[in-house]
Length: 479
Image (cartoon, rainbow, N blue to C red; front, side):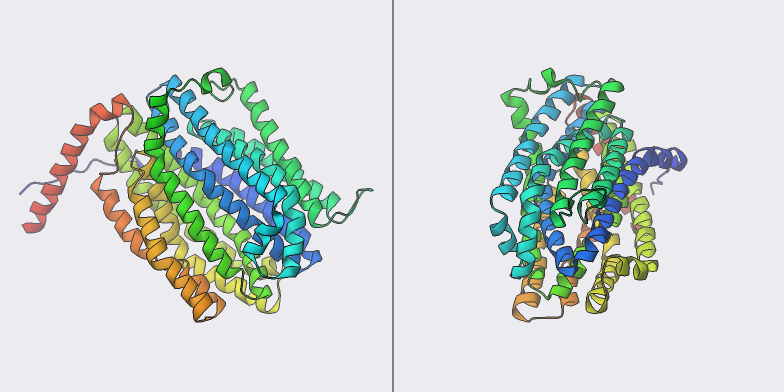
């Protein structure tokens, strides 16, 4: 009988490393979400229809997010592994490719919002009163999209190269700017015109400008070795682009197809009652708190695992990956419980009452149960991507989305006319099943697929060790 001797995992050092990345990212996202919540509160006096319209516009922004996030995920795969291998040219080259694709998405969505807002709103809802408000908002907010995408590309590079505080500073400045201008422009204070929902959109555009400026100024002041080296960002060749797209293609497919699926679900949800649409808009804002906590740990997983894979420390990467999911779900649970505990004053402050209040509370309760599986799946998928396995999570997510989730949502919402909360719950029906499958893949270690010479050299020994461990476990089980 073979005995497995387990090394003591350095939890203290691991948690310290996670928190060094996760806390600034979580704080930045918390600031952004707080800004969105304040936006909603400031728009609340204009009525539930305005809140619902802006919420639907946010769904179009989320569609843009899925359009460029595949390039963020692919870019961070290369950033982290090249940073671990100390390959400066690799970092600059992969950032230039990532930036090029991301800005293309940002400009296309910006033009669509500015030129075709009527068509966009008609897709998301059949309520004419909500469409009219959303059109006014989209025509202005479209100018912010390229700026927001650019700042996201910068933030991805900065976080991967241990400069997590710069995006935090930029996010803080952006939120302060946005909230201040909202106060001035929505209802008109200090001799400024009362622009209503258009004032909120204009405030967001100016805040996006501030975000970019703070990132660039701080990067210049700290002499960041990669972000401002524009002359080196575009020195990539055909073979570099080919390798990048090969690794990124599954991620891009995942984000695009999941975005299309979410788009269809939002169409179904957008054809419910006006009270449900208003409740959903507020829920999405609160959901940002949970995602904000999650994003910190997801970024930490990507960076801490990807760096070690790139440097050839594959066993350490594997041990870190197994534990970051547990940390993520612990904080997700705390965040959900916090929102449930303070839901009453929070929802009332966002102008919800009666049916819309009850529906939003129901969504919070359903989401709190689903979030542990959902964010665990997301963290594992980001971990696999940073280690070079961009396919497994993609295949599982797309398969379950199109074979299980979408049929359940469309049938319950459009055919059987089920209650709104039943339709909403169907959006998460696949998460527990995928979590079990993702965990099985995690413990196999087959997701470790380096792109650097150092990582590739260490891979045979790592795979041999994982095989010995599996055989030893089978032997112990048989005994």
